[in-house]
Amino acid sequence: MAVWGPAGRLGLRGSLGVSRLLCPRFQSRGPQGVEDGDRPQPSLKTPKIPKIYTKTGDEGFSSTFTGERRPKDDQVFEALGTTDELSSAIGFALEFITEKGHPFAEELQKIQCSLQDIGSALATPRSSSREAHRKHTVFQAGPVLELERWIDKYSSQLPTLTAFILPSGGRSSAALHLCRAVCRRAERRVVPLVQMGETDANVAKFLNRLSDYLFTLARYAAMKEGNQEKIYKKNDQSDQA
View: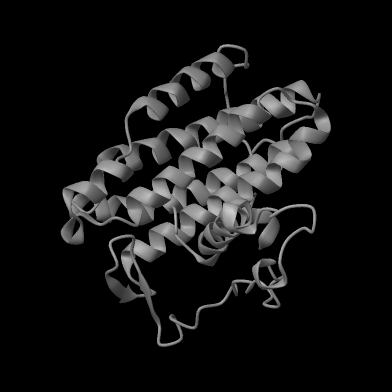
């Protein structure tokens, strides 16, 4: 979600400064050079560095993309926060995946970008947004279909599941299983917003397919790295007596 901030204003001042220096008023008037009164003076002001904190949320409220103030535990911010957590978990998993040189790292980076788009859609609740807002933050069905293609591609190369598996199979696989679990929670946070008409159904569909993709990819990573997946075995209750 784009935010206009001090950095943009600093850039504008910089460009104005360049224009000022190029103005004919400051060009040389002859062999003697520039007159003292016309010589551009260096600015003594240090550009103001924007602060990361705003203090606007100290009372427990935050703003949507539309400018509406809502409590920080509002369903919109719960969904936003969990989606952000999911993207962070994927970023963590990518560290292991990149070390192994897996080509699907590019897919995961593309998914992180889609999650950023989802964040924009979630931050634009329909009950308080105008058509202009929704036009810029709509989430299309294309990424959902792409996930389905990726799932089919990896599923066709995997052995058929004959038992429940535990999150395992090496660091890449285990990290992807963690992403899958966070994704399921993100989906649970988004579904009520879809049911209330606050966000597009494609958002929930994407998260639903993404959890399946992450599960499939975890198995695929374990297979490619030659790691054994752990199989669920029911505990023998008699051993606990």
